[in-house]
Amino acid sequence: MASKRDAVADLAEQLIRQLETQRRLGPPAYPLTVAQLLELAESAAPPAQLEKAIGKRSFQQRVVLARAKHRDAPIALMTDLEALAGSALLLEFLLTSLRTPSNQAFSPSQLKAKTARKLQLAFQAALLRQIEQGSLPVNVGWITIHRSKKLFLLADLHRGQQRSNVPRTPTPLPQIQGRGADAPATEPVREFAERFGQAFAELDRRAGGHNFVSLVDLRAQLSMPRETFDTELQNLRRAGQYGLSAAEGRHGLTPEERAAAIMEDGTSLLYVSRKTP
Image (cartoon, rainbow, N blue to C red; front, top):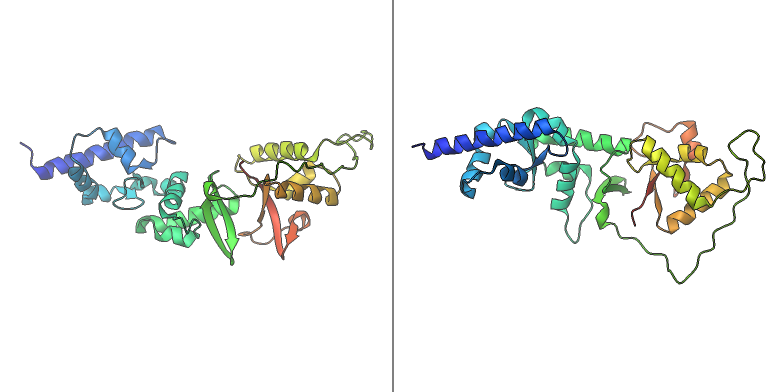
């Protein structure tokens, strides 16, 4: 009859094998949470024994666990530390587990401090890279408060609603020249919101669907007077359809970016994001 110590060791090895199986499947099956791993393992062992297996030194040396003693924490093999550090699963777990009714936005350093020590440096590097490249998960946003970036779940974002009993008359747009060189100057433009939405969707698709599009590209796509563009974009922002983000985390702006940006309170706003209804 196997000893209890042997049973725990066998269970730890079973969990490692399950992680290796999930790794072969790749995203979104891997990385996964501790709870998902235990469910997939289909072990009849009592909870106390499972906890001992997870806490066993031989198991801990072969895995990286985002937060100890937390069933919803992401877990992966040690060889996949970088993949776990940059995963949406980890960032969403941290934001969800740390949020409270009175605090729902956190700086990268605050999030880093709540991850396992061996994961911290890789997580911080991956998070800062995602912010700079505009590649955060689609349900995560960030904002600058007192010169510090704060990340939050978009589900926690509260927006005002345009009053439905007050009809809004679209601002008439001037007629502009079409894309073709021989297009007549009197060709009427389509409603700005429709054209802007189509241009945004196409540019966002080309960039990988991260909901982060540069004003440089949007202005080039929608050839029209700057005053008209800025006025109509401001109307869309007031209606809660789009937001603008500062060009932070970059090593200076190019002349083209400076020209395309919208200045507000001394800040260059360069990136547009579509807000979810």
